[in-house]
Length: 252
Ligand code: BTN
Image (tube, rainbow, N blue to C red; front, side, top):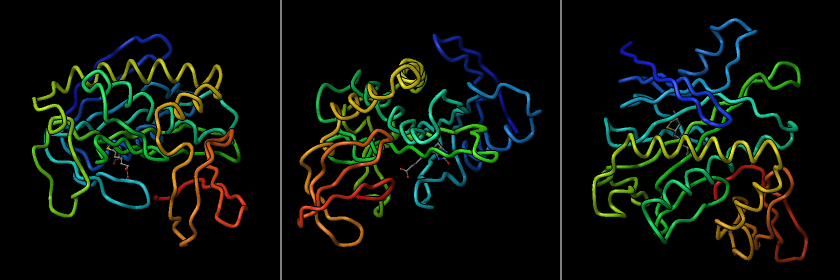
C-alpha cells in the first residue's frame, strides 16, 4: 500500500496521520491498524486519509461516494475520557468541528441535521460515521470517520440532495488547508467533550435547526416536534399525542 506519515502535535491530541492513496475505507483501515498493534499501544491520535476509497461506508450500512481527489476522507482513532453512555456525543463533537471548519469558508447557510450530517443550503456536504470497539463493557477505541464533499462539481443522479463546498463557495478548496483547520477544530472540541460534555450539547444546539421546534415525520410514521438533546446526545421528540420519545440513531 502506498502510504506516507505525518505527525502533528496539537493541544490535546498528537496526530499520526497515515496518508493513503487508495483504500477500501479509512475506518476499516484504522480498525485493522488497531487490532494489529499490541494491546498496550496508545491508539489515540492515529488517523488516516485517502485520496479515494473503493468501499467508503456510511451510516445505516450505506456506501459513501468517494471519487478520487475530490472529497476529504478522514478517520481518527480516539479514546475519549467520557462516561460510556455519553459516547454518542463524540459524533456530535465531530459535527461541531466540521461546522466550524465550513464556517471559515461560508458565513451563512450551514446546518447540522441530527445526528451529524452537515448541510449547506439544505444539501448534504459531510457525513460522519463513528464506530466503537469494546471489551466486556470497556471502550477499547472509537473511530470517527468524516467524509466531506470538497471539490465535486457535480454528483451522480441518485445523490441529488448532495452538494460540495466548492459548489457553495464557487472556487476550488485547498484540501490541505481544510484538513489542517478541521484537525485543529477536532482537537479543540474534543477537549471540550472531555472537560464538560454538556457544553457539546449546547454547542450542537446553537448550530442545528433540528434541536428545537423542528416538525418531523419519524421512521415509524409518527409525527413530532424536537425538544432538544438528552445528556447522552439522543434527540427528544414530543409526539402529537403529548407523549415523548428519544431517538438514539435514525434517519430523519
Ligand atoms: C454518512 O453520512 O452516512 C456517514 C459517511 C461517513 C463517510 C466517511 S469517509 C471517511 C470514513 N471512511 C468510511 O468508510 N466512512 C467514513
